[in-house]
Length: 128
Image (cartoon, rainbow, N blue to C red; front, side, top):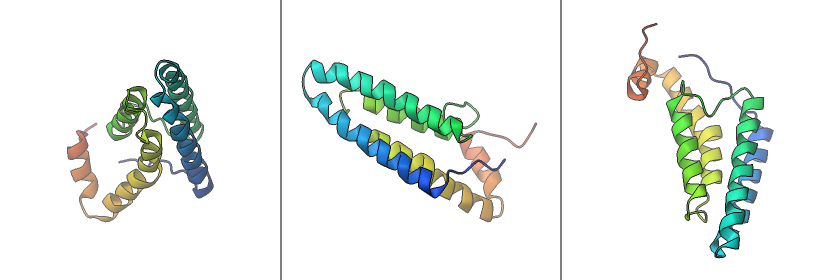
């Protein structure tokens, strides 16, 4: 398993703050009709912002090579685009992508045979 790129502390907190900001703005989706249209625009802007931000840091959150990141991004985006827009999905997604997943990878790298086990769970094989 190749070592994935990590996001530095300052960028993590800035991403987290922007995610909280987008989630607070998403509360306007509770207003009928106008809020729903506004929510879609906020969702689109937030998705493009985080996609570009991760891409500029060398992490592709929409890659089929890493199904965990792709699934997390898809689930977070669908929750935000749905009428459940009041759920802080952007904040949860950013916490997952910047803190939880790197912690899992760190633990897996320290456990003997952990990379093989994780590869089997995710569906990757060691064969080339």
